Image (cartoon, rainbow, N blue to C red; front, top):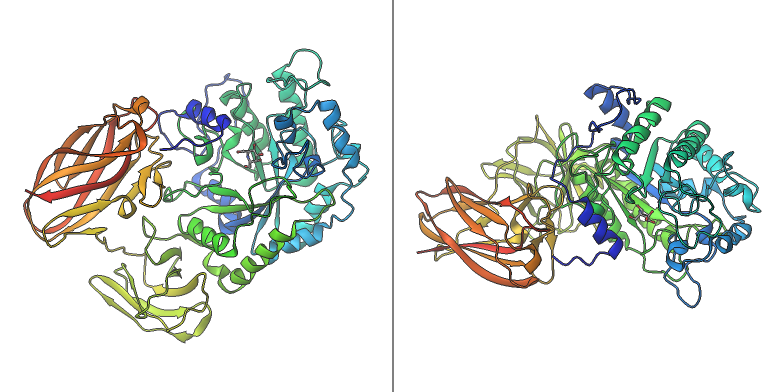
Length: 602
Ligand code: FHN
């Protein structure tokens, strides 16, 4: 596994790797007995509070601040954005001058909201404060805010009002880490405006005071925290702040970055200190969903920067955005897609054009995204993805079958089938023991993804389909890309051949359903790789009712593979057999990278 994350994130990831327990409903964090508690809610009350957010499925992230003034460039370098102050080490007194240049006279909140709404987005999360500590609203608690600009208006107020008028939920992003405030515990050497010794209790009071301003003045639906990773922020402070906010506004939804249990960019909680209502994978989509009741949202940039960078024209294509939206919804998650407006108050045209194309697709197919739940299949299908509503399956077809037949491994009777693009034209769909076969017209209505609807009786009945079948000589080759990856971090990686990677949690595992047609005795081998400092993991391979044990030796690199034998198993008779690889011990960072498992007849 290549840890090609920036140093900051690698250290964060290493520090964050705790025994894997994924909980997203506020875990109890050891705190003083008299500490305020969040309102106790039943499952029904929690589901009601999360309801609009789960229905929404798709939102706009907005990173906007004084860092938009330099527009990504300084001193001949052009790769900056919202981390400008941290990456340039510019004296804070000098950075503050950008506020005097921040005058977004072209800002039109209704236009921004229309761009989001026309794209099919149901909520907007805008930075009330990013890591530079600058408030995008007129705070009573500091002059380091929009009051210190020539703009003279309140962009959060205007956006909140425009959202309300358009029926879009207004939400805010608020950084815990604050490079500007003298009391933030990790003082920067280039903060020449800060005096005295940092006092985190004083900072806590300031943070709560500002959050009270944001909550009571703008009534955000979600408070999206970030910047929790530095040591001055503790699980106790996170739990305390969660309780404070939920008492301030019992309807407020809060992400898991208020706590300290997030496993880096994978975004889901692992272990103690978990607080918050949903997980936050960043720039990534989990391999699979996490089952009902585990809420999560993948956030991504549209280009390569969160804040505005005038040189970055590397926009995601509409195909990428639409298929990401589908993939995420099929796994039961939300997609929060970012725009970084200019210092003039304009959303970059590259973002606008992409979102227009996404909106055209959502106009026809949005009912297959918003208001749906994860599809019934545990892993991605070869031809596309599936989302669901009671009594309906939405088949998002990426690869249109040349013979016009689409096999769907469900046992339900299909009472009606049609394309969302042509709802009045009934499609023929037969049901059989291996599932339904839908007959599609010769041409896909949409080259990116066409949606077919199956109306079914009762809950979806998935027919276990073999990921692998036996070759003529009896060999069973179980490749990574046909595996079920179960867990919160484990996922496919690598080109051109895929491997199972990011096996950071010992509780994550890999399995294949295999259709055995020829019984017998088989030698079991694994093609795997492991960096020396992570060697020593122990694992089991279970084939049906037999289990073999193995130990991961070093291959001197996450991309240096070798094939190891771990023994033999007997399969007494043909039928479906589950092959499962589980870690039993993980002394290092990751268990192994796994390309394939092979069962060869003896
Ligand atoms: O450091 C921030 C970054 O600037 C941006 O806000 C993203 C968006 O989620 N979060 C942090 C990096 O993970």
